[in-house]
Image 1 (cartoon, rainbow, N blue to C red):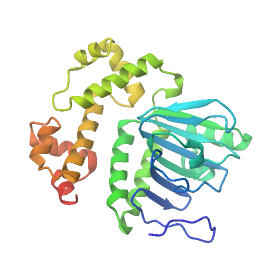
Image 2 (image 1 turned 120 degrees about the vertical axis):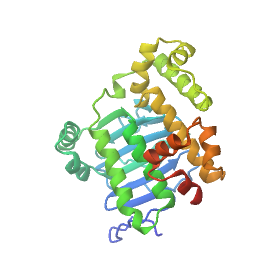
Image 3 (image 1 turned 90 degrees about the vertical axis):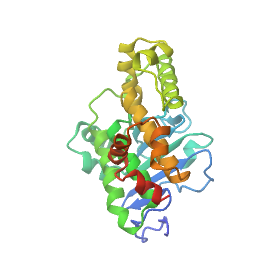
Length: 298
């Protein structure tokens, strides 16, 4: 596949590469900032652009007010940011020397505003465009966004020409869920001490997928009450603790099936499912394919 160039006469391709995809004004890229070469992602020509990121691993520091300022927003793993900065390039050079992995969606601000124009976020974006002021919205990655993300990542990795409609639909699905988020934005500020406790809870679940602690035990291990854990974990991660555990299990299951060639039974047991039919049902709900199909395509 040929990548889109900066020549305006070059038509956009709808064919996904290993980790990048282009359609009309949309650019969808899975990025690892720690390993990217300098010019791997071309800067955005259009200064009137919206930039949406989903932080998949690590923490990402993003300038809120532009170059030369120290006003930064830290996007923690499992959170999303939608940013509009008029007359400022949203390019890879602004994020050098960071360790985060992320999904990046870049598109013309006018196109995005037309898509979400009848929502509060769409009206805020329209006002920002009219008055030439920056806008940033920082929200947790909900379970619905994670599910669409899992399908998108797999489609871009394995798909060919015919996968373009699915890539586009999952990209727009994530934008829709972000736009219609009904909770409180992360920018409402979760105390750093609380975020550290939630990060510890996530690490405990990750290390104990086969035999996870119950919620009360998990709360005790991170030094907070059960009620507080139930309140703050979804605020920080976009989902309750056991939904996060299910996500960890499914992503590990995909790696075991596809990369290590494990049998479906071995995989189910290793990620904590003693009931094979329950494992298969959960896997299909998460990825849209059966575990046996994932193993065959590895």
